[in-house]
Image (cartoon, rainbow over all chains, first blue to last red; front, side, top):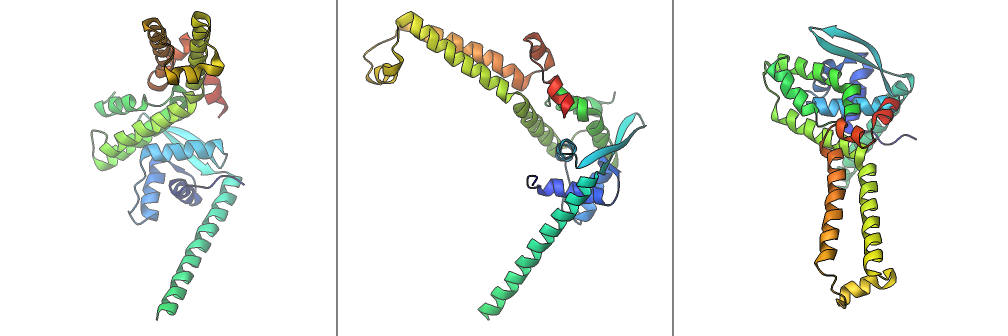
Length: 110
Length: 148
């Protein structure tokens, strides 16, 4: 079992779950995903991408030069896609349990 | 090269050369895109802090093992010097030091200091400086970076 995935890393995976994207597009999508709550720093993003690449969860789809800048597009690998599903379910289950517990606690208090 | 690009390039120097080869151009492109979208001409404080922090983490991860080897070597050299110079009995070294039955004198402290300085001088460049230094002393993280 691979090590636990941090919040920022999970958000990068979530963004890439919508399809291949380059660095700035990922930052933009994370902001959208979180309703503007989270703005990923470029340093955080590339720390996550570097790690995800080493773990072979993410790969480079292509590179192009736009206005003299390198634009590198990333995509999920097959194992990356499986990992997103597992992580998303784990997080959903945990959130659901939390809500259930809150509901039970409220019933008990009344 | 714009001022903004120069500023980012300077900040990226906090990372190891291996990291910069893997991600340098891509992160530069992303940061310039973000700056354009914000209409900025300088890095934000958060960006500066993030780059310095991640760069240092990268450096420590890459070079800490080597730095530790140098420190260990320093300790060994010191022990050897102590053994040869004063015939220190290592079994009783701690007790001798604690009870102050032996006053080593200024030569001991001088050698101790010089060895410590050499160790720091060898270890520090790995954390704060560039590839040149590593290559000069025959160490480089290049092969490690290429594998990842």
